[in-house]
Amino acid sequence: MTDENLEMPPVTPEQIDSIVPFLERFEVEGFVAGEWKGKPGQYPWFQFSDDVRQFFDLLYLKDWVSPKCNWTQWQDTAKTFIDTPSKIETADALTIQRLFTTHVRADRFCEGHLASMFESGHIVLLLRRLKTIRTAMGKV
Image (cartoon, rainbow, N blue to C red; front, side):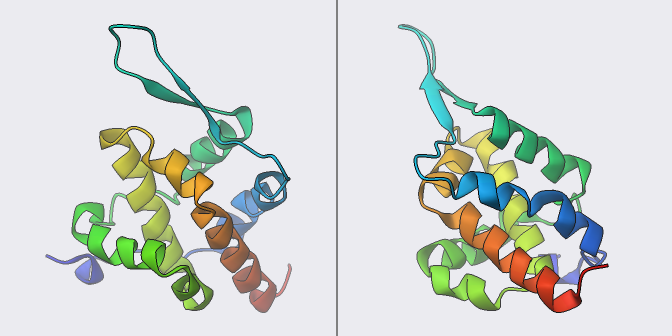
């Protein structure tokens, strides 16, 4: 079964409103998503900054990470949005939800994946697109 065959509920304005305020924090000059930690003999891990940890928690709390998204089958599609950032300019909210799901889930298996999405500016682009979508919806 492909991801497109799974019924995912539409993204709500409330979901968008819950994470778009992070855009301002992530656009601050000098923003860093966190830092690598580790000791000799230990596998290194990425420790997120407080802002990224709050954002990460909200992605789960507000259903941006959807169990209905088959992220393993969607990884190749997600890669096209990473390789061609201009594609994000036409993405809908459901696509962005799939991207967040894919990145968050991939990070559990590949330490630092989400950090690299912050470093490349990909997360900021997703939030900018959501802000545009939300503006088009009209504020409540």
